[in-house]
Image (cartoon, rainbow, N blue to C red; front, side, top):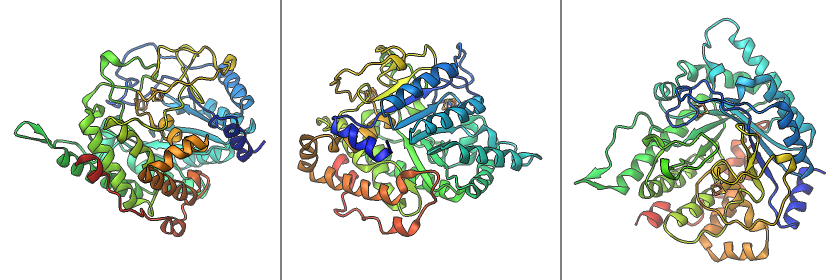
Length: 421
Ligand code: SF4
Ligand code: SF4
């Protein structure tokens, strides 16, 4: 069954096309302060056996899942295995296979053998059936990014590598984990007379996002994505996905998040014709409505159609964050009608597709959407733009002509005016 029929079949059954995120390993070689898996944190790190991963892929294929992500830790510490998993999932008919890297292999780009090494990687990726290949970029300032990751020289190496990847028709995505250093080392204060200034915070983050998009375009990226910050406090964090952190660099108050998401949503249209930006504005609108205290229309499908497979114990969870709800091994998972309406976090991997695709699930959902004229307009614009982005297929090059012809934001809706006033 091809991907189109799988989607239609799922939707007719009232389900979104399934997505499984497999944490292949907790091992990592980077120092990211925003992540619990950084090399300085000492704990026993696990790697899932290939047997368990193959079993999970088999089950995902059986259930007509459309998307499997292989995440870490650093997936490329188990390079050969990752390549095999992607191939295996592709052969099993899973269209959206995803993996990525912190970029450690792009260091030492002046050493002999670098070009050969990257040609070999690009060749492997092009043979693998990969759909999305992300490279993490934390900041518009190379020095800040490299210090945060503990990977000196990686920026120049990525630039060189992107040119080589293009020869193999592989177009990686720049993956920003939104943090306070997005625009460069953040030393600003957003207080006046001890009171938080949301307008100031908004302006500062709008500028940070502009710098970020300009930077990754200059590096040679043609796709960009943004991971929303996970602001858990230590006492409320029950996640199994240890990428969460309570460090200030990714912890934001509700007021800060409101300004930050508004800034992101307002800046995206400025760059949509220059780089394919996955972040859907309709999803940001939905999250912002939730932050404002309104009822969000479309809950997250984590634990309903989307699942997380933990490397530590090989068990399945509704997502990486609901770590008290083990569902057992994925290959034995049976699906019951799960009506959980969870909106407890902003993990974009599950939140964005939930709000994008839920309106297709029923007439009731669609009616809910069209009753909010703003969300409906943003949603239509997102879908039209995504089509012009070849749905972010990393095997297809950017088509700037098509992107320029994308529907422009029609109602000049400014998130700032709506959410910050
Ligand atoms: S964000 Fe990724 S690269 Fe950085 S420490 Fe965490 S797992 Fe490693
Ligand atoms: S909203 Fe967050 S915590 Fe809830 S199911 Fe989705 S990813 Fe999990």
